[in-house]
Length: 323
Image 1: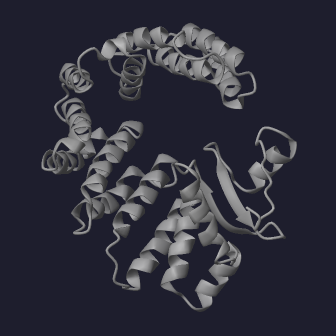
Image 2: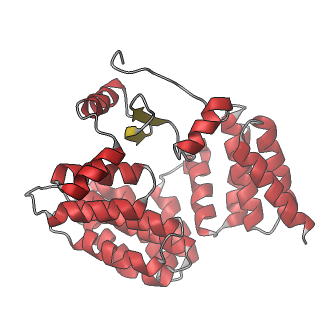
Image 3: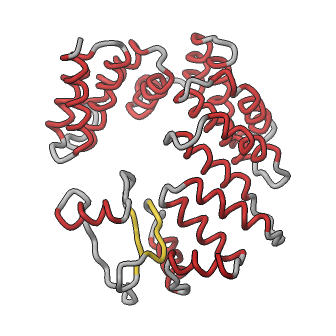
């Protein structure tokens, strides 16, 4: 850290709020940005890194190549290199410029440098994120999903992940009629890979029952069985089950019951606010806008500085008033 000027900022306060907009920080924290003395970005990365060692390694790698993103793009345009293509792809992935990231990953692949790394999955993830954020239509992701699952270098983990992400994307975009083959490939991969992938196998099998067989009761049964005996007595398990139901818009009465049970079993403040926010979403999904308003009011009361909760409360109030 002696090699940098460390400037920690809260995105909800003064300079932090201004710079969060300038640097496109978003809503996933923490965000780390290494910049030069002019504020030009060299590298950015997001999220906690499982202890100091990975963070130090990432920072050292960035400090060893102090080229700004703008300069690297200009250099790549004049003299394309494999290393620059990957660095730019990584940056634009982090900056949520998914289609630019895809373009640079594809340029790296086209350079034909021998590697055991499977870039088809990185391309797929960026395409899926682009569709999730409404940059491209659902069908634009299919070719990348096919390539990621068909790749000879595809790991079992990534093959499964494609199935899971396609199910999630299909639900959001109302395209679950297009995801059967991705679930099948993921189920086959998990089923061949032993007990370490049992949880993924169960999740994919439950989604297959729900989205392909239209067997809601079967999907719920598979999910419950996967959580083990006594799951409904463990806070984290029954709360995660409630969120699983919410995401799929099924079994919402039971989801509401488990979410309400979780409220007083978590610490007050941000954790309890999070559960109240989930409860508001469950109430909305059940058509209970009054309940959604009351729940979000409690979320705001628990964490008054959270702008997202205040925005959601206003949206629920507007919906309720418009009835």
